[in-house]
Amino acid sequence: MAIVTLANAKTFLQITGTDKDDVITALIPEIEADFLSIRNAAFDASGAITLYPDGSELVASQMIGFHLDSLASAGFSKKSESIGSYSYTASDLDSSGYPKSITSRIKRYVSSR
Image (tube, rainbow, N blue to C red):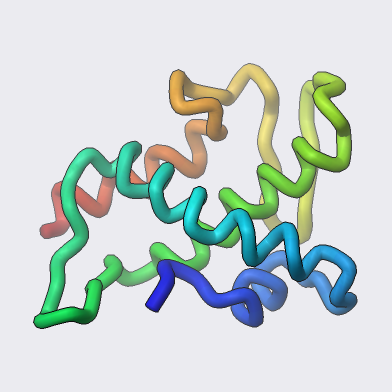
C-alpha cells in the first residue's frame, strides 16, 4: 500500500476531474521517497505491511499539490501559491525543495515514534 491513494490525494487537493490522474499516480512513489528522505527514518512495518504515521497521507497529498503547481507553472517562480487549504511562499522552501510547512510536519513524525 502506498503512502497515499489517488482517490484520497484528489479528495485532499479538491480535484474532481481525471485529467491529472496519471500525473498524481506517477508522483505517489516519488512523494513517498521524498517523505522518507525528509523524515530520515524508516517507516514502521508489520510483516509485509508498511505503517505510515497518522496524518502522513494529508502531508503526502500536500507534497503532490506542490508538485502539481510546479508542473503547471513550468518552472516560473511564484512568491506564493494556494491550492485548496494548502498554501506556500517561495521563501519558505527548505533544502529539500519543499515548503517548510510541509517538511516540519514530516520531521515531527520522527520524534513521535
